[in-house]
Length: 370
Image (tube, one colour):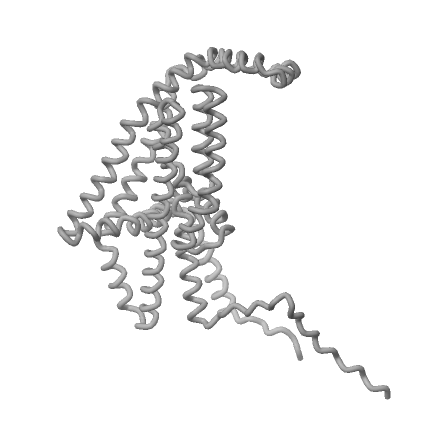
């Protein structure tokens, strides 16, 4: 009697057990998503810092080299904060106090321009602007109070940062030994392939970090030059802000340009604003079409669509830090997949030229008449 084979109770129990284990494992991974994210970020930081650590390690003990690099990591942000935050606090206070005056300046400019005056008469733009500007001092209050709320968020992140730095220090000091010790338990051929993937991934991450820092440095230096020529206040802090925001893929440069554009509204409107907008658009075209593609091509060789997807995923899962490490993480995954495809002998099909038409499918022979 035909029919489907009835699974044995043992097979059913095995299937149920495997399903339960998979569900439980996924749930545990979900619960541990934050520390796992910290470990991934620490791994990429360790790769990024391995260059200076290895360089210093040639002349001193590796532990001392790691300590020197860490001191540099602490001194640089503290120094930048000492330069950047006081002018920002003063600037926000000044903006709150002088907002009505700035609104009147914009209103006078609109009244002097016939076309803008007509638009203003139809939509009451300047009246609404002056009304909102009058409320701004009360809304902003003291800039120190506003920034203290930001400081609370930073304090809440200190534990995460310290944990990541501790993980990174351990990986810098002993990570290579851990990897080699683990590879000894694998077959020689498999260990060789895994080590090759890790080396290529480390090279891609290091190249990407160096390229991203160079790109951000160019953006910061050129922006400082433009802002200084225009006479925009707080040129140095704004240039530092652009440097850090430019490290964020896709949106960082645009966000920085918009922030600086808002500042130029209160410098010499509209001349400074127009010059800055033109410069920002021109530079972003150069960065997006010349500088960034060269960096990505040499460092990670990854499709632009995958860059967008990886940044969205990384930013959603781990915030700004996730967006920062998303591209090198995607590059590492791509390297691993290529190695796996090479191991399995998987090759892409050769593309057909447009002039070559695909062959006709074989037609079934017509049945002969009886």
